[in-house]
Length: 385
Ligand SMILES: *Cc1c(COP(=O)(O)O)cnc(C)c1O
Image 1 (tube, rainbow, N blue to C red):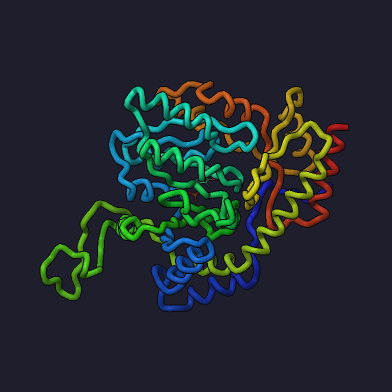
Image 2 (tube, rainbow, N blue to C red; image 1 turned 120 degrees about the vertical axis):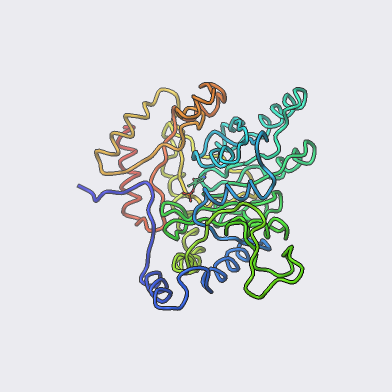
């Protein structure tokens, strides 16, 4: 029997372990030099002015929405084909959420569905204050068109780029915020690079950056220029807003720095595996994600859509019997019991519902060997024989 191949996994080297150990022996376990370095190198690698490291993408989404002014009664829209955190973070703030259907080709938020929904919302005076496109699997949404709609309808944009470290769109890295107000990344171990748990927000606006820094640390500032007191004593700090403790530790940031050094290799490997999948699956009743010109996925996931008539469960079971792990990304968020209790009904987004009934994410990770990949393709072809 072949060794178990999971759908995704982290890739940790001796250099990573060394980098973490060095911080463990240093003066700073949290908010030291490794954090500053991680924020600066991540931001520069993704062509953004600022980077704010936090405990997870979930907390990153929470304070990004808050920094953009989302609160009680505001309306936030996102894709149903995402992890629940994207919309939960809006609920933390007392906002109302709603979902925009996905495109059947890219499995990302559909621009035409967004436009139609905006049109209708305008007539009902219920326009969203914020739209959160999710770059599904690592593939960027059509950000240029979403930005055009935001200019017309006046909403803000946070990109949920949890899957997209190292992806690009229109020649710019995802994270440059060329078409958004802020962009959020995840460093959970199944994602592209890891810090154990962790997240980061990129932004170009100084005010957003300052608010994010304060929200991350209890709403406190230590910057004398920002203080309300006339003549603050040297020990003074001021809590000006209600914030949280969402700080990443320095040893996590050290792991992030070490992982970031190998990002190019990591993405190159994923691209090669994705290319081999696309060639190897040719001729089978399987659709891969449609990729527009100028868009490069980071391939966090390799999602496929089976043609009608294929029983997804049978493929899942067959692969599992052959020690190959796959996963379904995602059950539409509004199918979750919690969202059902909020009043959401199945069928809200027909494309997302249909996608969920036929999709499967095949194994995809940096450390996958050619032999493992050949074995997965072999098993898939055997199944369809
Ligand atoms: C993983 C993920 C999150 C949450 O990330 P954490 O770092 O685990 O909090 C949010 N959105 C999407 C799309 C994700 O895949």
